[in-house]
Every structure is written in structure tokens, then in C-alpha cells.
Image (cartoon, rainbow, N blue to C red; front, side):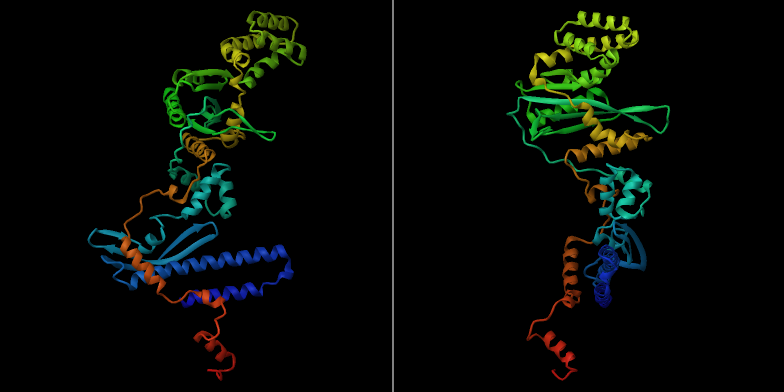
Length: 450
């Protein structure tokens, strides 16, 4: 305990002696560094104090006997390395071994990275690379492989259940996929994303999606994925006949499969994908572009085909380009017609959602992934986007080992509180009339006042 008080006195002395004339920025940075070093030393002393209390109170550790002492433990934390020593115990009855001090402070067996830091690394790894996450949070003290391993240990909690919104009559599903490169450069794969939301609303000039909720699928049977989507809709909005669901997408077969699983669903083609096929047909001729849109709005496929043939003959585009556009429009004609026949179908934002939720981390820059890494990071990104937060207990790799009983823990807490007073009294002025005040006054006057 004297060492803790001594560290506190030395810290305050160094802090008050710090010269602010070196510059405010340097002063603040130096003060923070001093506090960080002091706090790591204080934490180490406090852990060893816990270990000492367990050792000198046999009633607290009933059934446990000391095997050895002085074993060093090093943990990487957000503020630096934490080193401390503790005793190793054996429980004869259960034939078990444990570092009881580790169990009291919540450190698991073989744990090298403090769980709070581990959770922060996992949260940041959903936004940045493993290496950048380590550099930002702990100055690169944790390797990128360790960050990767931590993300794969995460078992996130279930999100809080939502109350059924039975008054909603229209629901939208934005469905699309992200194309992700694997570490084998000859291969690529897709990650499917579905986002549920109610009709869009405006906040000033900005558009937002009310009650947005995303679901992810990787290497999963398409029917199983849509069954999960249907279950989520039923859980949130009930199984009702008066709920109309619009499925927005680019016409991929897996997206159209949703029509078979989602009750009262209608397909809506994303305009962005149609324009990708239409623009090369027209080139830079805006007049041709307007004629094609007019044919689509008039529900006249024959006119659309004649217009495309004219553009091919005039050299506006290649024959193959025109054929690809006509085939795409014909296969998705129902998804185009709904734009003009059902105004409630609204607009699509499938590309934006995929870009924001998946591509920003998985494929916006050249990257190579393994299957497990794709599944882990995409799952955690969707979890965070749905409002979840990775907590320290979510990154536990193993179950907590056997330690002290609840009664023993309460007794230990009481013993700790009865220990010598913490150094908080060093920073307060004692009240007049108290014994401590008289002692200080006596020291002040050379003992004559006592």
C-alpha cells in the first residue's frame, strides 16, 4: 500500500513540475503520457494488492492452496502493457489449478490482449484494416493476425427484440450483392445483402430509411436466406394480408426467388442497373435516350426494339450492346412497368446500401479475402449497422475458469475496503479539529503545536 501512496505522491509532484512554457500542445501531450504511465503502474499495484489479500486471508480462498508465487502476467491494453505478478493455486477437491487474482479481475486463461481493447479492435476492424485498427488504438502493439483472430472469436449478443408494427402497410426490401475478390486471384465470390425498411421519409433535404434492418448471406442456400428474411418480416410486422412488400433489385435469379417466399411481394427493377445497359446503346445522343424512356413508359416493347435496331444501324452502338439491353429489359419488364403503374413502389437504393455496408470494407480497394474472413467481417459490419456494439464479453474465447465463490468475492471486497486508506486523503485538506489536522499543524510548527 505504501508503494501505491508513494506512486501517487511522485505522480502529483511530476505533474505540478511540468512546465507549460514548453507549449500548450506539448504540455498536454506530456501530461497525458505521464498519467498513462502512472495509471499502468497503479493498475499493476492494485492487482498485486488483490493477490496479497487472497493469500493472507485463507477464509477467502477456502479449498485453494498456493503452489508458487511471483508468476508474471503481461496484458496489452489500450494505454500500454500491464505487467503484474500473482500466485498460482491448486484446488484439491476439484483437482483444478488457477490464478485466483486473474479470476477476480476478469482475465481469462492464456489471454494476452485485454478484453476491452479486444472489443474496440473488433469494432474498428469492421471499418478499417486489421493493421490500421491496431495502429490507431494501441500504436501497433497488437499484430494484424491477432486482430483477425479476435474478430473470429466474437459471439455477438442478440439485438433487442422490436415491437411489432402492425399499422405499417407498405414495406420495401433492397436486395443486391457485393463482388469480393478472394486471395486466389483467379476466383471471386459474392456476398448477398437484403435491407428491410419502411417508405422513405425526409429530414430537411436528406432522405432516410425508417426502421432499417439488414440481413446478410454468404455461402448459404438461397431458399434458406429468404426464409430468414420472411421470418424477420413476420417478427417485425406480423403475418398479415394487408402488408405489401416491394422487392428492389437488379433482376438476379436469387433476388426473384424472394417473390416465392415473401407474401404479397412485388418485384421492382433498380433503375441504376437498367441505365447501365441503356446508356451504351444511346452513346451521347440525349434525344435517343429520351425516345427509349418514352417507349418504356408507353409499355411498348416492339417500339423499343425498333428504336434499338435503328440505333444499331446508325452506328450509335454495336449490335451485341443493343441485344444485351433488349434482353435485360424483356426479362425485367414487370419490374419496369411497376414504376408507372404503382407509385407506392418508390425508388431503389440497392447499390448505395451495398456500397455503404459491404463494399466500403470488402471490395472498394484491391483486397484479397479468405472465406472465413469475408463471413466474419461482413457479419460484424451488418451487426454494427443494425445498432449493435461489440462488447468485451463478446470476445471471450473460452468459458471463465473456476475461481472464488460469490460469498468469497463479497468477503474479499470487504477485506479490500478494510485495507489501508487509498491515497485519496493525500489530495484533501483535513478539516479543523480533526486528529490529522492537528498532526499536520504540529509538523508545520516543528512539533510545538502538539
